[in-house]
Image (cartoon, rainbow, N blue to C red; front, top):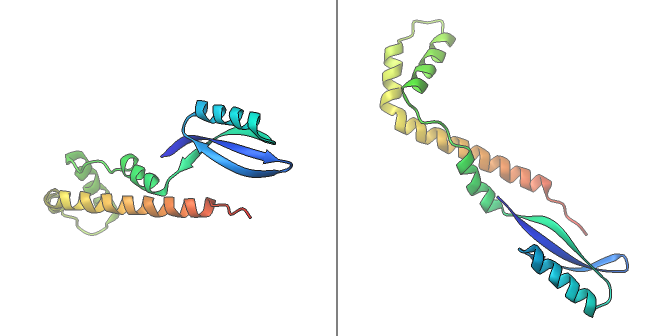
Amino acid sequence: MQEKVWVVTHIQGSEVTDASVFDSKADAENYAEEMAAANIGTYNVVESVHNSRKAMEEDSIRWASLPELGAECIECLVEELAEETEEKFDEEACAKFFEEKKEELQKKADEMVHEYLRRELRDYINNERVILG
């Protein structure tokens, strides 16, 4: 989700005049040394991360999947539904319904979780964005 990068900043006086990003610490350090020897100012190497909204959304699918609807899961759902109702509850009919529709229910539940996580990640990223200027 977050790719590690190294940023070489060029500082002249009290201002950062430019920054270069590297995917290798050694490359960043070598670049900073070469530039410091040839130019005026200070070159610093700072470790950071590269964030990608698309990668975050794709990653969310892997770590947020629902368990498969198996016999134990269906039994728990039926028991929970039966406890919450005061009317006569046909547990066998409910279990049969879940068994017949389990693939459809699983797919819909997965879609709901993934959409929720995408929305939460998007909102989190948008709220964390800082505009400098």
